[in-house]
View 1: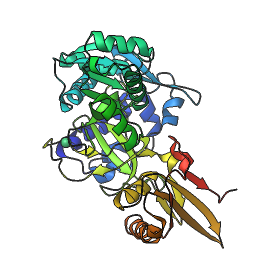
View 2 (view 1 turned 135 degrees about the vertical axis):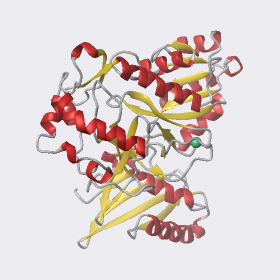
View 3 (view 1 turned 45 degrees about the vertical axis):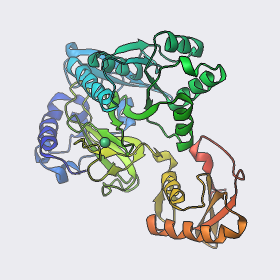
View 4 (view 1 turned 180 degrees about the vertical axis):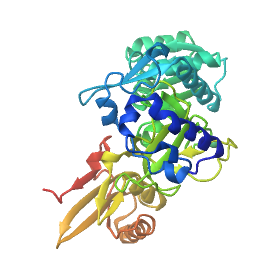
Amino acid sequence: MKMNEEQLSLMRNLVSSIKEKSPFYREKYADIDTDGIVDQASFETLPFTDKGDLRDAYPLGIMAVPESEIVRIHSSSGTTGTPVVIPYTRRDVEDWATMFERCYRMAGITREDRIQITPGYGLWTAGIGFQAGAERLGAMAVPMGPGNTEKQLKMMQDLRTTVLCSTSSYALLLAESIERQGLKEHIHLKKGIIGSERWGAKMRRRITEELGIELYDIYGLTEIYGPGIGISCGCGTGMHVWEDFLYFEVIDPVTLRPVPDGEVGELVITTLRKEGAPLIRYRTHDLTRIIPGQCACGNRFSRIDVITGRTDDMIKVKGVNMFPAQFEEVLAAVPGASSEYQIRIEHVDGKDSLTLLFESAEPAERYPEIEAQVAARFKQVVGPAIIARAVPLQELPRSEKNTARVVDMRFR
Ligand code: ZN
């Protein structure tokens, strides 16, 4: 995304002082003349920062202010060993709440609302971010934390909760419990703020229908404040992101070069105002794209698409990087093709061959026509030639996990 004037000026301030403030970047940028980083092109020559760097800096090596200025720390889950600790100054905590309040406002939530918060509290950034934003807005926060579904439902009824904050899977679980227990008429929910993760259109429809609420995707990660750095608006065309605090880039995860706006790649974020632990070109490993143009809602902030996966989901065939989301886009655009699919990759006669199996509700005699349309559209949108094959509904295995959709037989 093109840096605007405000971002350019904030970026120059950040980069020119980073070696002085941060021992971490002093070492990382030891061979870099940061005074030469004056525009977007030179900024794009700076090396990326990755989660591994932050792990190596454990516990407080990333800190860029005197310790007395730190008012709180958060930590991201250490599923693979050493956790990452992120220190926050008072201003960082306030900035985060400011961004989060904006998210609530974007979703049309006001001080009259009662917000039930089911993400976890503690070292993790989720719960407390939802809480601080709600308090700053002036709404009533109901800080439940995760689990204990019966108690969640009781509070939801007795306190007449109007907004549910949760993951998509927990929202679905609550929706199903409400349905099963026949509680629908005692529930006053109007909106759901759902942590942006990869979740299907079907699941979204079920939650919307069973709870009768509007859903908003909220985005964030612990290394960059936490949830609340972007949210979808009523148009449902991607998430607006707070560019006055952060700079967003989308790169090709293999070549590491920025991709043109509109193309899918890995989201990279630079914190423009963060004091405690500023990060420059931080790789999120989340796949998305920058949505070009202005949103119909009129909001001036740019948009990224809802997260379509992780870089770990990426497949490379015939030298082209592909993402499950691209296959989904193609299938969604062809009438007669359903959204269930499987990708099979083989190595035949010294060449990679990709077969896209997809379900169709149409009669079998129409398959050849639909297959031709899918293959043609894929070639047009993504590039490589593929074999498209339709199968009847319910033929393909069902899984919430994306990786199960890809069967790569090249390495067997
Ligand atoms: Zn909008």
